[in-house]
Amino acid sequence: MKKLIYLSLISGLLSCLAGCQKEFLQKPETTGNVTAESVFATRNTAEAAVAGAYREVLVQNLWNGRAIDNGTLSGISGEMSYGEPWATLAQYVSSGFLPTPYQNNKAQSSDNFFDSFSSVRKSYLVQENIDKVADMDATQKGYVKAEMTGLVAYRYMGMMIHYGGVPLVTKSLSPSDDLNIPRATLQATLDKIVEWSTAAAAGLPDRWDDKYAGRLTKGAALAIKAKALIYAARPLFNSATPYLSLGANSNLICFGSANAQRWTDAIAANEAVITWANANGYGVINTGGSTGVPNPNAFADYGTATSTPNNKEVLLAFKLDENGSKLFKFYNPTSGNGERYLIARYGMLTNFLTNYYKADGTDQVWPTGGASLPYSDYSTKMQAMEPRFKADNYAHGIDSWNNPGNSLWSYANASKGSNNPSNSEGTRGHGVAQSTKFYYLAGSRVWFEYPLFRMPEFYLNLAEAYNETGNSQKALENLNVVHNRAGLPSITVTDQATLRRIIQREWAVEFYNENHRFFDVKHWKLDNIGNGIMGGGMREFQFTTNGQNDRLPQNLLTYFDKETYTAYWNPKMFLDPFPQEEINKGILIQNPGY
Image (cartoon, rainbow, N blue to C red; front, top):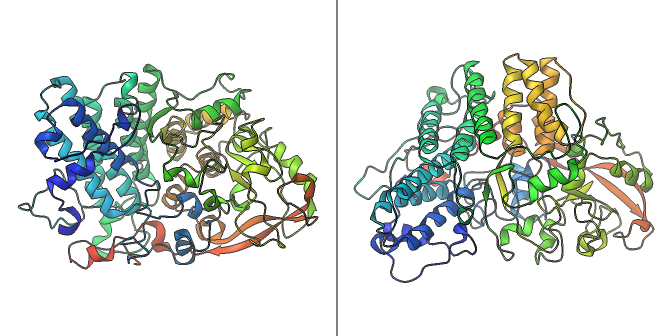
């Protein structure tokens, strides 16, 4: 842990002063000779350090050039194909993450273990020095301290989901401290996250002034606790035996018991989020529906919820309002993205497409077994899909639904073509459709604010938890808040196993491309996870053409389904590996199988 944790105070403070633009979380860069005294001399420079702490913590699981590098989690979660064959995700698809260095990274990881602890340290540095600020009142200083506690809880929540039990650091460590900190048990890690998030909620305001939009509120802290507890209740951790034995250290990766109380704890925490949201102007956006009725405005409401900055459905977002940021190169398919070639082969997989409903709430019937159908069949079926599919994707040969009439988003301009056995890129990557998520009515705007907590998460958490405790009525009540908002008729199934699958399907569709699927399917311990979910045969549609431009619908003739690659799966992948260089120091215990 010594190399991992020890950063000098000056280095830590320098990197806190992140250059950005607009609003509080885009504070301008501060340059010059930086010390704790200079950074915390004024409110302005201190707020730059606060903004830097947010940036470092909340980027977890998003592209920052130091984790999976060229790609996003959707490319290895079974949602999309993995992009270019030379990019980082191809390594994961072929052999999973490894604890050894790869390209410019010290280990292959979706998290970057080293970044987690440097970001936690930066939060502590702000917390420990904020009292130095002369022109900030005691109330604001108290808020900042609670924010930093909340950020630490957020990052640890993510680490627990990635790794299980991790080393617990409770202050900014100095060279004189004992830096050889072993992994805490899973229970101790969870307890600390709950302690931190509870303390943060007690010290945070319900709302900030508009210029401070994006800072943690009481509701965001409650959300951290709620998410940690739902993952604690799921089968991967909530089990008498671990997914693979770690011998006497199995308490690092599971609780050692399957305890129904964990679901009850998750219910209480998620109900608290919704109670707070209802009292403070947050909620699921549904402008056209009432209880139990399909929302006729589902397309616009869902598009607004996932794309419009500062909307009432988002409790917390990663705010990076900069068109030039490389974060967005893996999301925006238009010519405004100078590196959009990187996402040409991030098409949705047929395996994932089958989670979506038709607009009437029934299942769509897609070709199987290589059977070829006319392109008109594809086009007709795509037009019949549910609003969330249309808000999140464009189909081959069809202009983007979520930016109608905008030539920038036309199929001819946005698409890089379809899978075609006769074209130069071959038969993999372009998928059944391609993502436009986060860009509803965005026009030429490249940036978006990546949602980290949206209100449907807490309703689906409750649906899942109530179902597991045998309360199908409450499970359906919460599930249908999300399902009806999507324009779909109410689910009425009460059989626990069937309802469990329906709830998991709702998770998949509602949070497509939002970094949920990669973790959800592992923590659910799905029996078929290695058979077409995260591993096994991955399928995509293939299109035949008349030999002309395959970006024009009139040139698309037929389509069929085909297995395009096989993704690696091994039970060790339920949790991520720790970097081998940390294991070699003899302090940390590696997760099993690595």
